[in-house]
Length: 382
Image (cartoon, rainbow, N blue to C red; front, side):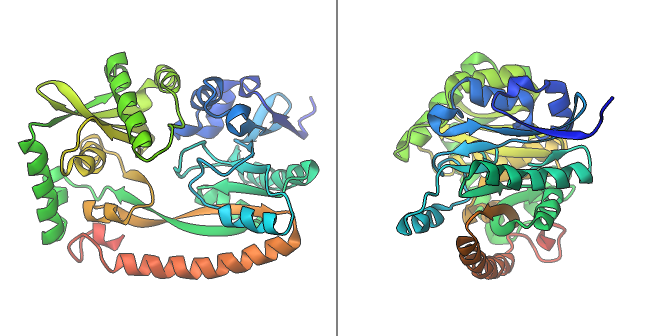
């Protein structure tokens, strides 16, 4: 049997066997075959919304040896690594920036593998093949967002430009319980958290954790009402539909962790997290009324308490947000990788990235000097 590798572009993920795909994707819930298909087949990430699937697949015979979630994008929305200034520069010079190629989980700024590979040779082959495909179809650029450190080594070697950014993650220092976590924090941060928690309790609210099949249709519907409200309050329609959430939960129930704030058994606020491997990922939140401290308690404190109680090693709190430090989430470097076809723009972007990286490193140093933890604790080591 011929085992020499071959590459294909798949515009329909159903053409790739789910078991083979998931074997490469591992335990990252946002990369599972069912989750991505739910994005596409409910119309959330589709050509109509500017996300046209063009998945790169590396085959050895009938075996999937590597794959890249890849989209042809007609805009830069829903990405969380901002390249609008690059698009504007192309336009000023009369050049077309869109469409571009993007490897990312749609609408989801979580870290994880993007070069899904059986080994380092396949990972390197995927990085090279991405550039070859970008050149073949004549796009302006190619971008991989929030890739793993293992991916970054292959991408650097393939010649991608590297961009550094910052998120805020919590890491489990082995606390016995939530009170032990609070005890590790500095006095002023611990005091503020306790004050916020008292306000939430004084409003008659209590929290309940639900995972997997314990989350019913009614709870999902209430969560979606909250999710929509949050988006509309910021002047935008939601990216994701109720159909998407119901289907994704049906296909991957154990990944869903729903935190509900309730008063006398009636829900008032909800935060949806996804779990995979040793990580919990904070994703969406909303409330039907304003209560001081409720957002931080529901999204961060309850998620950290859940991680401690269930042995998760880390909690990724989403994109950006220095305010998360006061709740125990520490600045964490994240990465993106970029290839730009026009060498003049590639050189200009490289100079910009050099300057930006210096600024980001300075920002990280400044943040780390303001740790929310007591000095000389495991957490304060960052």
